Image (cartoon, rainbow, N blue to C red):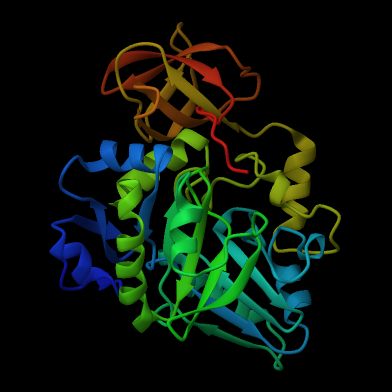
Length: 368
């Protein structure tokens, strides 16, 4: 797929002007890194100060009408009744027959009759399609992918940067509010995908460039940086956060991903409940673990994980060099029986890389 056929965010011209290295993310041309230090410098800025991410490629959808909350709660895994508006909640859309994860998403619980959903870029249309196929006639379910942008402000200084624009920062984790900036509505969510303190700002599509420019200016006193999706990936991997297509997929269920905390097992229904309950009871599927390299090398996705004797016991789902630890780290699916502290090897292009089984996160951060 070429740049001519990829979709672009409302900030595309900003990234090009900064000389960003661009790549395909779910059919969208998005920045991987910027000149002047790339992923390592951007990663460090977020861990130590503040960074700004364009994540406008993420999907947006609206479910509106009488009974919207009850309908959404009958579709997705998490229990919406554990929270009250205005709160957001991580959840998963699973396949009814297999329990595989069609997508993971954030659901903004605006009211009993209105929810705003943020799926992953490539999966938005499929999530919307599945919902529309099941929805009662009185519900309106619309794909709003290009009606809103999303900017993530992440790092210890994120509250100061957001506050400099007059936007609210005294929000509980996963709480949101609709605020005014320069006369325009902006949803402010206390959340992120880095483990650091942060916010995700949701302006209208055409308002996104001006908001980005203001945030860039506001973060200069803190030596903040525009960050690409390469740093976003290393940051989330250090935290052990799942990425759809890697740690979650149509072949990797919430049980396998250890994402049962986002499943409302006591709910009457959600898509895939029966098969997931059966899998949970059987206790035979592989489980997610972290791997910390003790030798020199970087584990990569799809590499086999073996015992020192050569028996295959798993597969790497994501791997990278941790900029914080200066060691290779990975997320992996391992056979039952694996325990913390086990010494294994990862086959990296025919060379054995020694690793230790650990429980993520790989680094500790202060998110309060």
